[in-house]
Structures are given as structure tokens and as C-alpha cells.
Length: 316
Image (cartoon, rainbow, N blue to C red; front, side, top):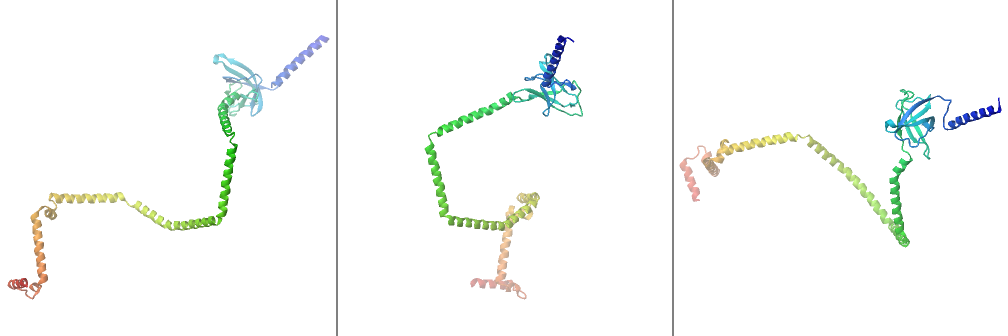
């Protein structure tokens, strides 16, 4: 074998090893069997071929191809080579997210129900996770509020400049107030103790009074319970019926249909006769009371004797 052939073979072998090594560093393993799946995104946000496919932080494959689908509103089709031994469930999801703080991309795969696996070549559901830019957009209102707060704090500090003497005076006055309060407590410790004891005694008395009030409250509750048991509706109905009957009686009396009572109220002659009879009866009872012999003697007295006795009484 000539020297030129040997140099050529060495060059070819070197190129092969260089190609295999560079792809190995990219995560391409030519010796492990893989299954190809697809995902469609609105925007891949910097995703490139050879970016990893990750499950729970572990790399299970790589992005093998990226192409644009102009017949589907320019959406992006991403081809993923995933370990053939990994079962992809029907509800799996391929989430495009940042792989590190520098912004490199990866596809995070969430495995669905492995009892219902999908077939090789199927398309997996996709979504895009919020990146650093979205995080910064959400943080913008917070930073704005923080800026306003810092500005106000600076204004407060600026207003306090040159107020050191005033603050010192205020603190001295506060210290004096606390000192005077302590002195007041020390000088009146006995009085304060007595007051607290009296307050405790008053509290005990109130507790006893409350225990005496308990039976009264219980009695009131019992009375209320008894009142609740009264059928007020039936009672009021009975009263209403009674009042209706009385009104009927009064109506009969006024209309003259109430018998004797109606006649007494409407017929003056009957009233006068009854009044005269009562007057005569009263005179008779008075005469019997004054002259019982006229009526209770063995045979009584004759009319003439009675009249003679009455004349004598009149002369007297």
C-alpha cells in the first residue's frame, strides 16, 4: 500500500471520528436505537437541532430536525429522537422551555398514561413555557412599584435632614415621660395594689351576682318556652268569635229583636212602669220595716187600724 493511500485512509478515519465525536458532544448517539416523534409549535424561541429532550431532569433524546410548515400558518415542526425503550403515553406533552439561565432551550417531556402508549411517528401535544422575557414582563409592575417606594423613602429621608435636634428633643421628652410614669407607679404602689385588690373583689362579687341571676334567667327562659307552647292563634280565634257574637247581640238589641232587654232600651213606657213598680216595692219594704206588726201579727191589722197608726205617726 502506497504512502498516499495510507495518508488518505488516515484522513478519512480522522474525519469520521471527528464527525462522530462532534455529534456525540451534541448528544447524538449513533449506536442507541431511537423512536421518532413530532411536536408542532407556534414559535420555537431559539430551539436548535441537538437540543435535549428531558424527562424529570434526565436526557432521553434530542431534537433531530426543525422545519417550517408554510401550509399550516408557518408553524414549526420539531422532530424528536427519543430512546426506543421509553414508552410515550397518550396524554404526554412536550413543553418548550429554557434549559439554563443563559437561555439555551430544551424540550421537557411529561409522560402520560403508559397503559395507552402512542405509536412511533405520532405527534405529541405541545406547549411553550414562560421564558426569561415573560418573567421580566411580569416583574415590570413590581419593579415600578419598588421604584415609587424608593422614591418616597428618599423624600422622607430628605425631609428628615437637618431635623436631628428635633428628633433628639422628641426622644428626650419621651424618655422624661417614661421616667415620670415609673416614678408615679413607684410612689403609688400601695394605692395601685389596693385598687387592684378592690377590683378583684368587685369581680368576685359580680361573679356571685351573676350566679344568683342565673335562676332568674332560667325562669324567664322557661316562661318564654311556656308562652311559645301557647296556641295564640286558636285563642285569638276564640276571642274573635266571642266579640262577633257580642256584636250580634248588640245589633239585635238596637234593632228591637233582643227581647226584654231590647224593650227596656227602646220602649219608655216599659221602663217607666218598671221604675214605678220598683218605687212602690221600695215604699212597701220601708213600711214593713217600720211597722212589722201590721203584717206579722197573728191575724194582722185591718186597713182602718193601719191608716190610724199612719196618722199618728204623721202627727208625731
